[in-house]
Length: 231
Image (cartoon, rainbow, N blue to C red; front, side):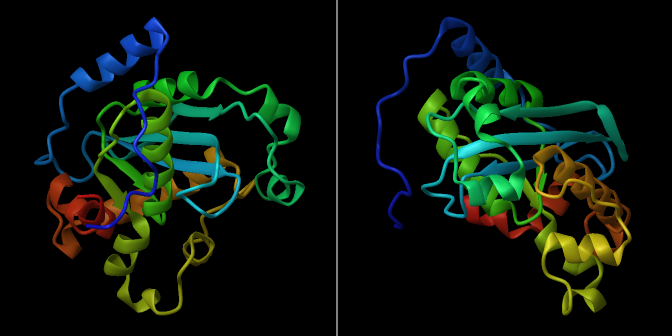
């Protein structure tokens, strides 16, 4: 058995309002995996961090946007900056654009993460290179809320090459796929902007779902490596 990325810790002592929000999230039913891939709500997620080590670096911001019944719902979106004891490095700030003052004035981590749970619910999550986002969220939700966050993720880095195998050999990162399909990208590496671009790629994957043998949401999720990895 592989060693844990973070040590055992006692459950956090939560503010009553946050504890109630966590309890509400735990009580939510799981979404129906038999629905068509374009039906229902998906939540596209992106995180900004203090570095590239998902097991150690700090979670700075979370962005998310809903794709419901085959449409991006701009009004159903979420963005939060988590309060940091110390700002991340200048080099790191140049990547995501979240300055030291904004980091110092962010929401308390437990409050920010509870708000994310409330937004995401139990809908399937989507990201490009999802293991990084999954580990960061899992680690911080465990640390600050005592939540074992085991969710279904659709990793577009896994599934897009199945939908367009002729492109797979020359495209790797999100920027490559966005450029290939002329998906506009503004403010790259700001979490909510990355979510909007990724959501457009998700719509294209949903349209190709039947062609890659994914007639249901559950089947589409099964094509991504991160779901197998997290289990």
